[in-house]
Length: 231
View 1 (cartoon, rainbow, N blue to C red):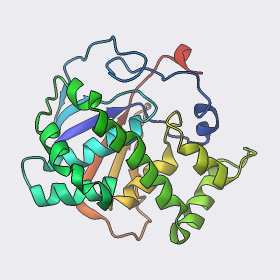
View 2 (spheres, helix red, strand yellow):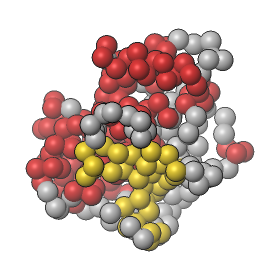
View 3 (tube, rainbow, N blue to C red):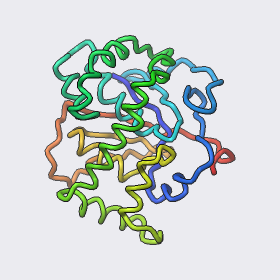
View 4 (cartoon, rainbow, N blue to C red):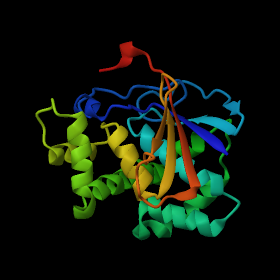
């Protein structure tokens, strides 16, 4: 198993600022957009697997969730891989299944440049998966739930929930708690987040009555960033 290491905000009201940022906030090892220069370091070996960095390209949550969802079933269960691929990217993208499967077979926890620089996989993760998460929150049967949660954390912002969702389509907008909740429900999986302070958050929360596939678990770690790089 692996632990996905990512730069994830835990307070979704920050998206008002993030959607207007001038540049990506780089992780020390990311390989996307304007800072390609810094090399990967060897991942840390955890008790339950490797800790893997993902690109700090403002879609870090979507990278982390996507990889944390499909990598555990690589080379183990091809049927399950196909099902997870479809949940992530939609039925219309199944034509891309074979090349992405072949790409991910080359996954190396010590060096991931080929995966993160692949144009098609970038589109699927940063655009298509992001779009599906936003559309899930926009669907009539889910919208009121997410709107109420969003309002409880963003009552000081003079922006509507609909405008917020529209801005989340921008690739400069970072995901937060709201998107993590949506990802957990869209993928029918448990998602555990370790915050920068070491706090353990579980999605969906224990009071949720949603049916969750206990075999699917995504573990995310929020990493520190240099505050001077924020915008």
